[in-house]
Length: 580
Image (cartoon, rainbow, N blue to C red; front, side, top):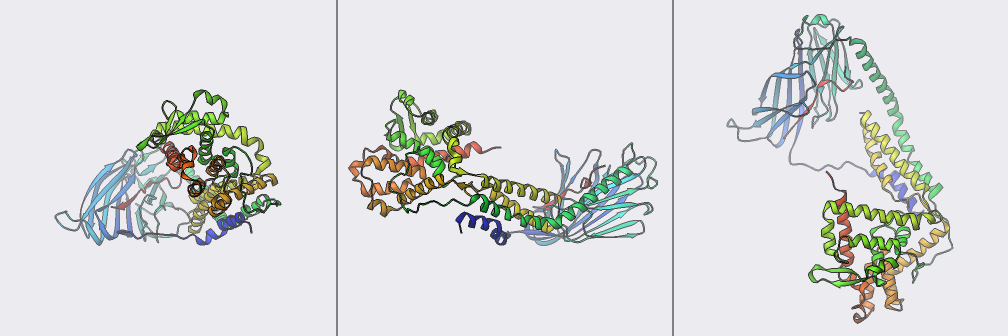
């Protein structure tokens, strides 16, 4: 079976069975064993809230925190904080986003000097939540998150108790509607019990309360001069309808996603199988064509997509200019080596793309000299790197337009590769949407896996799914045979080039193909050292020119890219918390 098909099958199928969650043991951890919340609704619109959280700490901790988002018109008053199992003190801060944060420091000694360690602690919060009750013209509303998405850890269970003035006329919803919970009335108190709630989940309570349960002027409520009942009914009904639709979709989702894995396989079989050619030579002892090194790098190199110019091709072009005498080499001692332009006027005699490459690098040199160590220093500056990268990419794009685009389709067809990338993009988008809309564990797991798989398909180069034409594959295979010859040191020794001029030619193309070191090693062993002393291309590699160039390009690429009635789920309260 073709190697590329094997690769696609591995990516599409075997990855699914090999992905596993890997977690590293940490020095410390904690769990929230129980969350107990009591809401008491008063006739003046004030809501008294008591929260109790039981933590079990493994390792050393300094305390816990609780954050509560506040909307316009809301405030928290009369806060009290207590603890059992540790000594405590607390502080309150409010950030620019309106989050009310309670930081409770926990100590194991009465002098408040030692942090807690390996213990169980219960923390209580008691406060008045002003502005939490919405008073409409026809109804009152309590819309409150008993558990918010911002908790760092989940809770093993949650108990909530909502004390009304009367149970008569109360209508309520618990969101998300599919969340498993038990509710019961005890007189005018509604009790809600849940099992485990994970970090990132929310539990929201919404109730419509008759206006008769409040004073004529409920001072601590938020007054809204409109009717609210029908709008709230509509919000909840629309939400439940959409959730039921998503629930139905969730049953089909895994089947559809796994069946979709046949798309890249079928795409390969349709568009990616290579044409047969009458060529099976294991080696070529000479460059099979006299194309530009930049063209060879883009079309017949193996590190990038077909048609994409890499740094190898740019460096090979510089070597070609050294070989032609456009550039010479100077040894700058501890400062390494410099490329020197022999004559400014000579730029008009070379190809436009070659002149553009030289002019770009000369901008970061001085007086027609490009010191490769200084080049890296200059490109370490982010502004210069961004400027360089912009011109560098323009040179490559211009070359592509002039020399590659006109013949590209006669060498290579990338329709299949485009389909595979579109497929990868599609499953990432679909998986991300599902991940944000459906909270079922198996859908979350499948979405994460397919986001990962989709990202791989997006990043694959166009050789996966793409297809050479007969002419393109013939040239590609010949260049690969030549590359194997350059890599086979024993073969070079057996069939060496006849002159130093040809050696230089080999070294240029070896740079374009990414294996110049092999040719340099062969030159060291085969060619007398006296013949190499004045060979600028050899000296360029011998004095680390290739490494300095590669390092400079990596620096430029790196520096240039471095920067710097609410709907369901929109209830008040919630927030989160954690330990530190």
